[in-house]
Image (cartoon, rainbow, N blue to C red; front, side):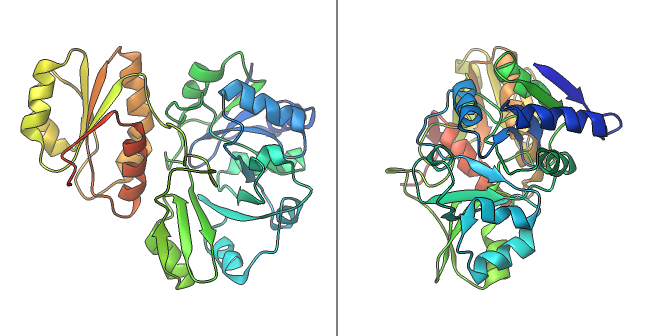
Length: 338
């Protein structure tokens, strides 16, 4: 695996060209976006797309997201864009919003898992935009990790999972958002969020004046990544605590071996000092939780932790996305209201 590293936060033109040449030749390259690291291949090279599925161990019925760098590339993969979809692109692209659109009939079914729709986004990370531009075509890119594992927010996370299985890695440091993009589908009378992210329901509603609802179904054919299979999970078990659960968490610390805690700073102060602790920061702000959650889960795995106690956060705004990931990763949920 060839590694390209940023110098003073920037990649040289030579490194961008070399990474793009690997993509052009049908290779797969991991690269940073503002959300998480992606594992990229040409959108029009089925052999390269198959390498992504093989490297990740990804189920074939889990669709991929196409990344573009310029508006004119959209027609290569999608068609029939509605005025409301155009409005969302104007508001949120480049940025962490994936729109599920009607696919271009020429687009490979490997990308869409056989669906007549395709998820498309324009990332805002400058390296991602430069790499896609240099490759000359849109890039399909799921998260650059083994399927089911926490998504990578740093190059070392990619190397942990995929070293030896991919052609190259662009090391751009830590990502800024830390959670995968919001995935949304626009209908004539509403927007359905298939995967919550940092572009929140309130932001989508403000931009379009349409009601925005969260998809709740988990069965059937997944329209977007993260809908059907176990995702985001470390090797350790996750116990997710909802509400005021200090006593329950304290008891679990006494009863479980090799335990870590991920909680708000005020909760951590009340727990035994001997516990392995990771902070979610102050209550009411989900930014730190979103940015650090996956790194915390991977760090706990590296410490040999067997059980991670996680304090839930308010599921509003960005907190809705954090709780979506935690619920999918959790082995048990304590304090759920019946």
